[in-house]
Amino acid sequence: MADGTEVTSRMVDGVELPAVGTYALDPSHSQVGFAVRHMAVSKVRGRFTTFEGTLVVAEDATQSSLSVTIDASSIDTRDENRDNHLRTNDFFDVENHPTWTFVSTSVVPDGPGAWKVTGDLTIRGVTRPVTLDVTLEGVVKDPYGNHRAGFSASGELNRDDFGVSFNAALETGGLVVAKKVTLEIEAEAVYQA
Image (spheres, rainbow, N blue to C red):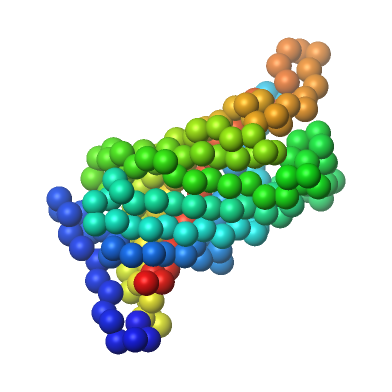
């Protein structure tokens, strides 16, 4: 660290955990994405390119917290027409709800280096609890002296619960876009203080 303070990880029950403190998500080394079944035969994946977040690692990991803000207009599914449709009132309504937020409410151990992190997810102004399965991928000091921690997280939500209900029925049964959405997150966070 610039102030000469050495940041070190710590061992808890045989697992190397990040040092206690505040971490900022590194957007260039993180991804906030999702997958949703399309036409009942394949999955479409998307990601958000603009987001920020703060992780506070407590001495007792269950007292840690996470807060993330996502720019909903930064949606990228590799199809400009689809992305533009997702930004409309049919789906995300970014004109009236430009940001989404996730604020953790509980952290429960789920095995060595793993936790169930429940939080309030707000999409389109609707807030619902969502639980993420979080795994610590590692702790490292980078070549520039920064202390980094990596996490993978996944979860599921029903998009209807957030008012993202646009759809069309298929002649063969089923829906063009499934209601269940799988969340896929890879996060790298950098120690701040």
